[in-house]
Length: 135
Image (cartoon, rainbow, N blue to C red; front, side):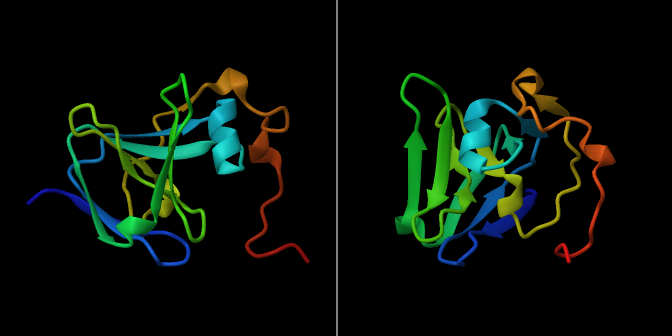
């Protein structure tokens, strides 16, 4: 049986599974990924030979393709959560790591486009850690 992971959007309107091995996890710091994640980087899993199956809410999935680039963002029309998409070039699937409910054993392979990182995204290991919300 193929490896399979499951996930959903924040509001639960869209759920999905990805069947096939997850090959790599990258943290991308390019300005496009920072804008569409609203964070320091995107965290995406890549599966070169996988099948994406929508379990519920496929009609709520929207896909934005930035003209003139390879940049794609798939998201829930209800809550805006990032969702996976198939690249259309031979079965590859890109999965936002935070959209998964299943555990993933992969660790990030690399910070990519690191030279493009936000100015405040430096030496984050030295920032204090709080287990809950700040008091």
